[in-house]
Amino acid sequence: MQRFAASPALARLEWILDGLDGKPGWGADASDVLSAAFTVVTPERYVEVTRGRAGHYAPVVVVGLDVDETTARARIRRHDGTVDVVTCVVEPAPPHRIATTWVTGLVPTDLTPRLPADFTDYDLPPVAADARLVVFSGLPGSGKSTLADAAGAELGIPVFAADWLLGALTPFGGRHVEAALDVAEEMLTTLALRQLVAGQSVILDHPVERVATRDRWRSLARRAGAEFRVVVCQCSDPELHRARLEGRSRGIPGWHDAGDWSDVRRRSAEFPSWRGEALVVDTAQPREPALAAALRHITT
Image 1 (spheres, rainbow, N blue to C red):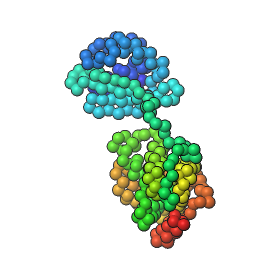
Image 2: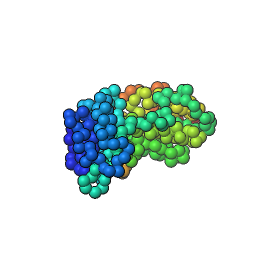
Image 3: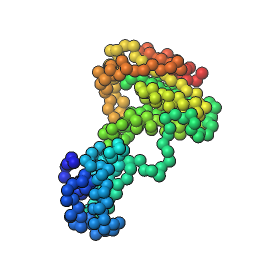
Image 4: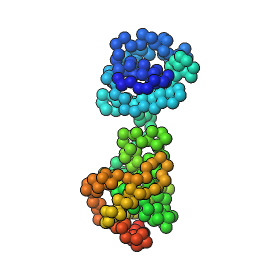
């Protein structure tokens, strides 16, 4: 098992992970490691249970780690690919024995089901007849956020942007999440659903390069009885596009400003075309005609 920097909580967590790793002779010191307040089971029973769980994890693969003053959590992968969270809480004073510890699934089993990939059969109340789900799509630096914000201000529709949502997660380790794109799209889907259920329109600001996500949002709009409108932003001037990308200053808390031009060029070559419902706007033109075209497309 991989070792991490020393700290009281981490040291005790590593002791637990050694047990889940099936380390020979592990647990002989359990009476010294576990606090006197650890009364859920006896030390002997805890060692027995932990050794039994090793069959699901050994060799232990840690895919995430969170630590504060007295608590350490490790996300570890089971043999079937699912992820569990091992939490260890230690006493604040030396020798920092384990006060409590538990293992839970990354997604608790007692929660309501997550949102579906297709909303066709989703139980959804009717929404206002004039509600719209609007998507501003396009590569980074294409001007989609500028146009989306302008359209939202003009129409009085809230704009939700993936970069703002992900930036808000940075203080909590969001930059190290394995599936940041999945997280962003799930939050955007949830926000869109919430707006539509409230009978209100919504604008989503996101590249939307995955066709499955486009289909999902289209099915949400259809199931809610809302109009689905897409504005695709493209910049026909590569030099202007690059200058915007590398020189932008958006001030999104916890997020970066400048983008990687080589990455955008690669993504441009792979960017799938939208269906006929999308309006393609060339953002190399002045903003006023581009905004006017977008507004006509959204409202008609």
